[in-house]
Length: 303
Image 1 (cartoon, rainbow, N blue to C red):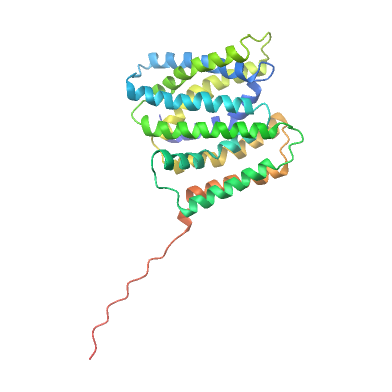
Image 2: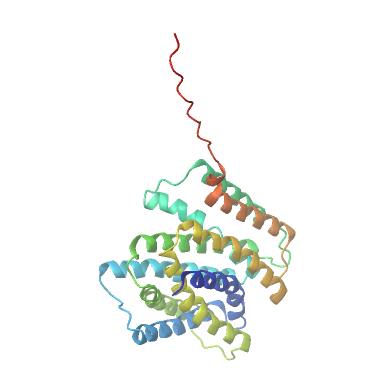
């Protein structure tokens, strides 16, 4: 697998996933949409594991890595699906732009990483100001938008925690094995959630919902997670964070063009603040250049 192709693939998939999430839940409900997606994804992953003869261990270390991935696949994704019913699809991508900031905070708390420099803290504060601006935006077309944003904050937190734990525990696993293991552990929780919340097969499956579920199962889950874990194991956190600067803008544009979504002007302002804070958090320290003092030539002693 070529790393640039994997990187570009993650950008494309992450940019289109929010809109596909909204479409997949139309008339069938978000829980059925995500459960059916996971069911198809698990089947495809296990088939690929068998076809390509990928070693998929089930020792204690591997199960810990699978469980770390399942935390984001179940908790983070289910929260995002629920949030998609209340807010524009592009805002999902904007909120997930906070992932590197949340991951940095969690890595400092859980792993003891000393990475919270004053510049990074300034970036976090600017992003929080952007988040506050988004909260104050006029969502007249989306009366339950605040509830959706709160759900997305939960999704971001769980996804960030999952990313930190996967980075810490799953470095030696094949990307397909990591993806398959996480999906396998998450599927029973999705099945239980669907049975508790709904449990009934929809009477009709609209074409757009069906295509969206298929797209999310094949690209959003199987290929998307494989590319993500592959890139995550080979690239720095800063390089992965660059993806979250590009996808929100693309996703907002797609939601506006393809789904006629109303995006209040203050949301664009808040988005700019969030992405600006992310940029400062990741690369602000590079702008602070301390010029080394030139050592003067020693003068010969006089007299």
